[in-house]
Amino acid sequence: MEKGKLYERIIEQLKDLFQKSDDPVARMATVSALLYHKIDYYFWCGFYLLKDDELIVGPYQGPLACLQLAHNRGVCWAGVREKKPIIVPDVHQFPDHIACDERSQSEIVVPVFTPEGEIYGVMDVDSDKLASFDETDARYLQEIARMIFMKS
Image: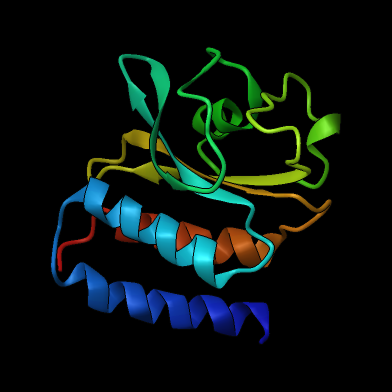
């Protein structure tokens, strides 16, 4: 199935599922599970939450994650600093990349904002293949990230 169409189907599913709860953590858990199981190039899918100026692991699917990310290093912190999606075709070429699992080859990070426009955390997706993510992923993952705090 074409990538955009797959994301559109997932977004429709999430809209239905999100009718049951406005809780952002429950929604992040649902997003992680649905994306991880529906998109074959996803190796790890989850969230890192900004708490007391630290990035702490939140809901995720996949291999074990780093519990806390080194401050101001790696792709997730780049997403926090730049407040925009970060697409990394080869994580081994990214300065200060944090390898929670050596099998990770490419990554995309999308910031999650509160309704007030503050950074709540980031959605982080890894693939065990190089160059898995593109602007299509970024566009749809931003839409999904916006849904975390939408009222149902």
